[in-house]
Amino acid sequence: MGGASSPSPTPPLRFAQWAGSTKGAASLIAEAIRQVRAMAVTGMVVIRADSAFFSHKVVAACRRAKARFSMTVAQRKRVRELITTIPEDAWTAIKYPKAT
Image (cartoon, rainbow, N blue to C red; front, side):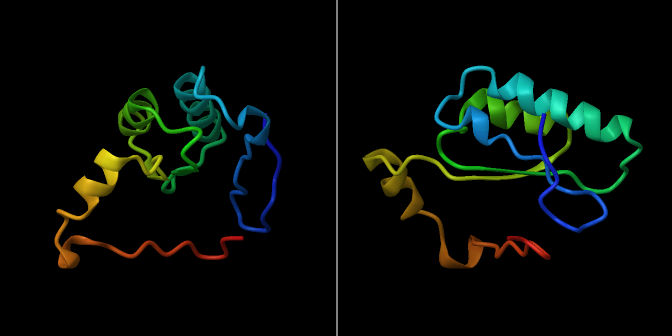
């Protein structure tokens, strides 16, 4: 399903072959998390995705699996308007150790 791309103890899975389509993305992510957990991984699972993978179903799948997630959302007018309403002190920096 994916390939190792990091020397970390739990290498990230990559899904570039699905880029550009959200069709099936939620079930794909849910299955990937199940596979990771089946390997006895007990640490935090972090899903990173670009806007092509974003959907409410994908977010729900991450939440059901208790995975952390970081996704970009297409910068449409309404999204930009909503972002401006977030107070500056509400933002949290995300640190990805050994991220490439």
